[in-house]
Image: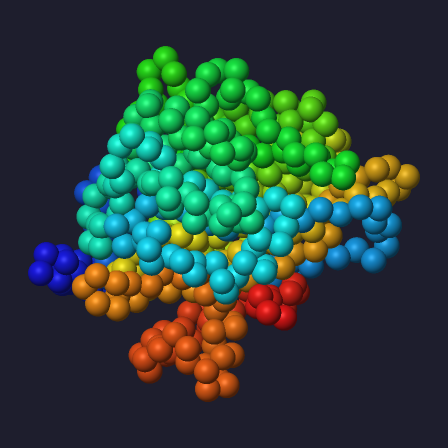
Length: 446
C-alpha cells in the first residue's frame, strides 16, 4: 500500500514536471548532498519510470549512436593474448538466496567464466559473524548490507566463476571499519584478488597486477560516494572514495595509482568505477568528461557500475602521459546488475557481460599490449516467486531466451506480458546501448 501511494504521488509530480522529467538532468546523485528536488527526482526514476533519454540538446545520444566499437586490427602482429570478462554488481538481497540460485549461471557461464580474469563489483560486505542484511522488496532508504559466505560461494561457482572483486562502492562502509577488514580477510582466506578498499595505508598503494603469459594487467577501483557517510576520519585510505560524478573532483589519487601500476610493469590498467546516475540509460555530460579525464591519467579500460541499469560503451582515443603514446581505450559506463534485484525498476532487469581480448604484439617496432576484440552479451535478470516459500533467480542470456521463445520453447514459463517486456528490453539494448553492428553481440551458445 505504501508503495502504491508513493508511486501515485511521484506520478502526479512527474505529470506536472512534464517535459523536464523525460530527460537526464545534471545532478551528482550523491545522497549526502541531495536537496529535496533531487530526492524527488531520484524517487521518480526509481519507482515510476527509468529515464531513457539523455540530457537535452547535448548530442549525447548521437555521440553514442556513432561509436565504432571494433578493436580488430588486421595489421597488428599478435604474439600472445589473454581474456577478461566483466559483470556488474553483486549485491545482497532478501530475495536472492543460496536456495533459489542453484542454477544461477547456467545460461551465461560459457561466456562469462571462459576468461583468464573474471571480474565483478562486490557490492556488499561479507562479515560472517553478523546476520545477513539484504535489500528488501520495497526499498526507500539505503540498507546496511551484509552478505553471507554461502552466497559468495554462488559468486565463485566452485572456483569456476568470478575470480577478482572490486570492493569500492557506496556500500563499502555499511558494516563500518570491521566490515571492510572482515571482507578483505575473507577474500584473502579464499584466495581471491580485490581492490578498492584497504586495511592499511600500505595496502591502498599496493596495486594488484596480474601476469598471464607475459601480459600484465593492473586493477584499480573507486566509488563516487558512501551513501551519506564520510570516510573514516584518519583512515580515509580504507575506501577509495572520490566524488566522480562531480566535474571538478580531484583525481590525483587515480594518477598516482596508475603510476604505481606502470612502475610494476603493467601493460594495461583497468579501472572499476562505482559512479554515474541511477536508473538512467545514458551517462550525463559530467560523467562522460570524467571518464575521459580518468583515461587521460593512463587508464586503458573502465568498467562502470552502480546505476542499476545498463549504459552505453565508448571507444576513446587518448594520449597516455606515462607510456607517452596515443591509445584506444574502452569505457563501459555501466554494466548494470549481475546478482541484484530491483522489483519495481523494469529496466534494471537488462544488463550485460563484456569480454575483452588483450593482445601483445609489435607496432612500429615497439612492443605493445592493446584491446583486439570486444564481445558483449546482453543478459536478463530473471526472478519468479513460485509460492510463499519458493522462488527462482537466474541470469539469462537475453538473445538466446528470445530465440528459444521464437522457436516455441518457453521453458521459463513467461507470460505474454513477460515476453512483451523481454522484447522491449531487447529493443532498448539494440537502439540505445548497441545501435551499431560494429562488434559481436553474442549469445552464449553460439
